[in-house]
Image 1: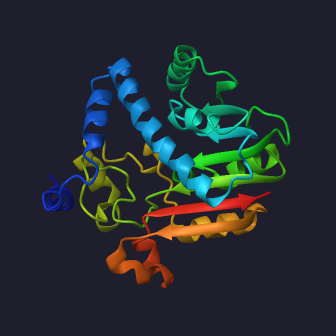
Image 2: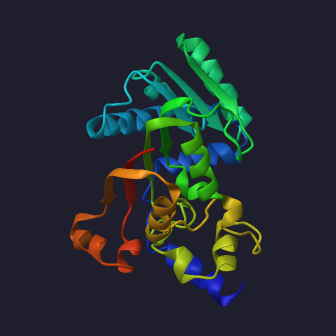
Image 3: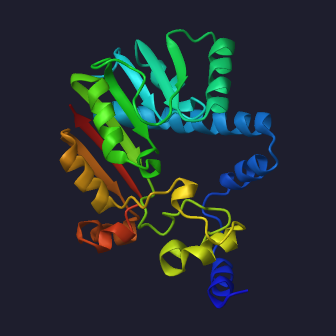
Length: 267
């Protein structure tokens, strides 16, 4: 075992998993028990979705009663929460098996004016100006071409429509690698070579972070993307642990501590 890998493995023993619920989801996914995994994943997303909708309701209510798109909806937990506040809701995602589960839930719940469509990750399957609001929650850091995705979101929003966006932790954060269970160590992805991290996870050494759906989106990169996107910022909040709250105003250093970005934009 290479020195870097040994050090990486040892470093993880200093920390505990900051997201215990992820353990069960990871275990179910590894067992390839899709039914059990989707059931647990969906209800987890429903609770997160309710909190996300409540938060955005507190920031802006113009979108209530409108037509909504949930961009990167997964199994639809957030989409159902959105539908409770809107005229209609469409969820889109790359993974058909999650969308199929979401459709089953809509039928079981008797939820109308909600739909789920699989798309290849490029052009959104909707007409120009089709939506009053687009939700993009916990998705930005997983987009391989976020500039193109933002252009598509802008295309399907009506003039004056809203983009409600949140994501985290960004790449620079101690847990920016999103691998809670196997790499609980703070800043492991920045301190150790990629190959050592992957072997510690149990993957081939040549596996990339991009293959795991992480595209190194820092807060600074996000800001540059949004400045070039054509959207007008109405609100932006950076969440950070209270003891180091003052660091969110320090360029460069802040990228290492901001845990979440919450923002509202207008087309």
